[in-house]
Length: 77
Image 1 (cartoon, helix red, strand yellow):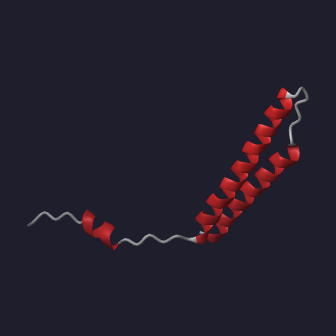
Image 2 (image 1 turned 60 degrees about the horizontal axis):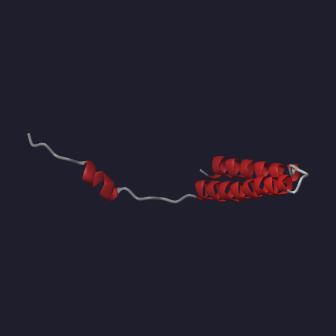
Image 3 (image 1 turned 90 degrees about the vertical axis):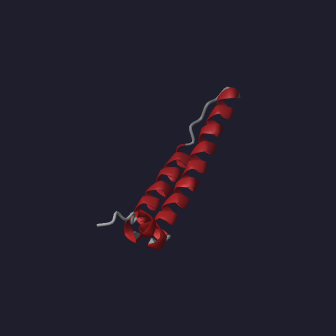
């Protein structure tokens, strides 16, 4: 009985399939992260000017976009 290493065969025959669900999830996650970073940056800039204001609309928008990405990933994967 000969010892065979079939790990190399599996990796050569395996195809990488890029489905739409994870792609949309990562895209929406990047957009939501950018909105969040800009909202936090705006908070610190307004804090330096003396009147800190949290942009709640921007944070809610980022959360909604992130949730849409989760929903698309669940539906399309």
